[in-house]
Image (cartoon, rainbow, N blue to C red; front, side, top):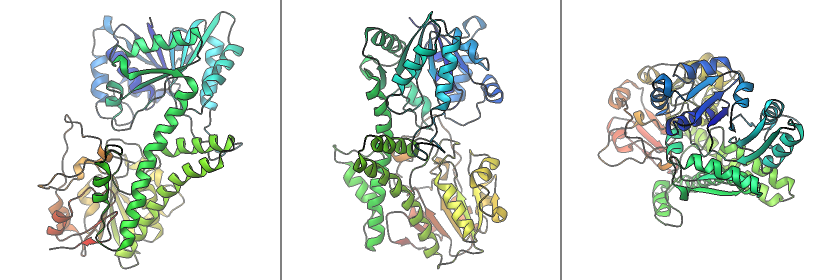
Length: 491
């Protein structure tokens, strides 16, 4: 039985994972280790540096346990945490390589290999080392060889693949009620035994039938495949939305989405038209898949998956061209409010957010841009916009009403629940079908107040097909949706 667990890396994966294990397995002592002192301090203080619904509440519950029952700690002493662990989760970043062989496509494994070498140097006895980070196929085999070769004679290692399937904004829900848990191992008696020990830990709160044991290669590929196929669905529906817009008729992508989603072979999830996907995972994992395919001389396969990214980029371009076209071909000097900057709702993450491209391009066209996001700090917005554009016309506001005051147009980029318009009819769920958690409370925007403060012709460009066009038209606004060529004019 596993009694001590260490999660190396206190970021979006390691911190929530350690918290959920400690919460559900009071018999296991969990250590989350990271060399970043400020990051560890924020966890110790009960206030992680990123926003994730339900995380702070669960963390507080665990940290408020009686001293004798405390089973979660956050430390910077990584080597000590390794030595006392039965099982070690590797939760470090694996970004796309910026130089060398595979530049721009392959995953950079330097962080994970550095930690593996540290484990080899300090570990004694039996250790189960678990890949939680997303890695290329075959990484478990490489780590097994590295640990065995570089480790001390009295240490024995088994490397498992246990990919995370966390979506930012629903990470705690994903950990508590996963759709599946994959555990890949070497198909040896000791490898299968290690996989069973990890499965036993998960079975504390996850039904056994959802815990799947397989070989490491399949587990590693399944993670890349899942993200690639989710991104593919969004790019596919957006490609159909482009046809709807270009047709100039009454074709509407929301109707097409509903019709396709009712087919049980397809289903409705991830079929909402919009400006496109972002985040740290989809593009990175697709590029890794492209690199693997090319390495195996499967060039048609590589081109196929590369087109998913191409489609996503062109979706942002089309949205920006439509904004300019609707505003009479010139936005220089026009005031444009951008609502939302996180790559999606219920997270503070701005990695690859469509909002970055939108704001940069609006500034390049000479517009005066004001940005508001309820969860992204102003300094993070400014940093994400970057230095390659002139930011003298960029204003980052703490208030949506200040952001929209005297705006010629509003561009909605992130489907925060609080941005909804009032409506008697059901509005589509945000996050491509993911339900809003009932415990969350939102302060909804006063859209009549916003509309009254805008300058005519009061365009509202809905990058998430999230707003009620009829309601906005009744407030004197012109509502422009994606995947539909028409403009909802004021009544």
